[in-house]
Image 1 (cartoon, rainbow, N blue to C red):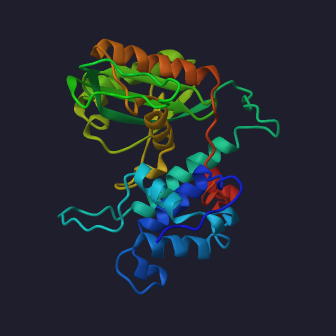
Image 2: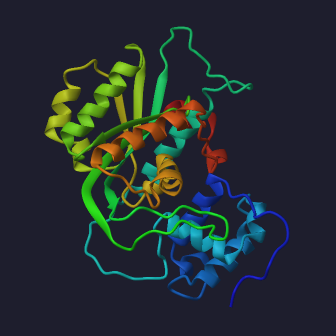
Length: 311
């Protein structure tokens, strides 16, 4: 079976709506009042359409089953499959998620009604950076030239064979006040690389500002080497807010990485690792020429003023 054809433009899916879909997909159907233990794409699609309006996402009432599948695939969510593991669960998931969402709410309140950043009287800003690593970006070279599109043959033709030239890691953050994307490309993503990224931020922002970073629990972020570096700079210069385990979808930069994969990395071919690095930095230059300020909306209306002040 397939979705029936629809007229008009596809439904525009906001980041908040995507986050809601992913949140539903990551829950056990039985806990939401359904009979089955695992979602099927059909049952998940029906649940989303049936509960979208109640959750504040009326446009999702007309979302297609195929579009739901695309959103799950982009986030590498496969709620239809089971793999067995033995791992200590994070008992503080809800409280950590709440901390992340409170940070997003605080960022929202740093803008005036015209969308301009409100500068405090003491000129001490809190800069919030959504940060993550994207390791293992492959440098792949063609063994033969691509055949470019031409009249009567509108597609790119590419030889099946290719050559691997190695990989690079991208460490990146998004300034949630300006939308600027900040990159560091490295051959690894160890503590030393993370420290190098922190040095970039430290040099970038005025010394009186606080740099608040939303990040995951990678060992490099809490290592002895990282802690030693933090001891060498002003107390309170950096503030880390960690996402819960299996909560990477709460970090806004994941949307940026998904966009980057589709726009720039998909099908990329280079002649060297150096060319790959150069093109990654060029992509960031192009993005920053017209920066987009990211806004998080999911569950943002649940917080009181006391919640926001008390974080």
